[in-house]
Image (cartoon, rainbow, N blue to C red; front, side):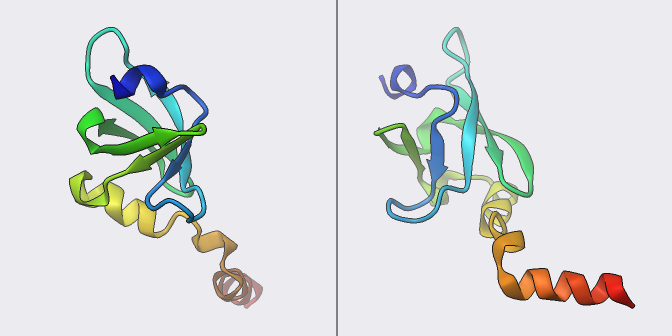
Length: 96
C-alpha cells in the first residue's frame, strides 16, 4: 500500500524533476486514507491518498488533476517569493 511507504518529512512534487513544493506533515495510517502536506507560501492541506501518483526516494509525486482547485492554485504559487521579479516587486512596494 502506498500510504505505508509515505513518511513525515518526505518532499512533495507535482512532476518528477521539478523543485519540491512542500513536505509531508502527517500520514494517517490508522484510519483515513489521506496525508497532510505543507505547501510553501500556503500552509497545510489534506490530500487523499488517491491523489498520490508515486512514492520513491523520499519523494511523493502528486497527480495534479486529482487535487482540489484551492490546492492546485497554492501549488502554482509555491515558489513565488523565490522569483527575483517577485522579490523586486515586493521591495518597490515597501519602499514608497
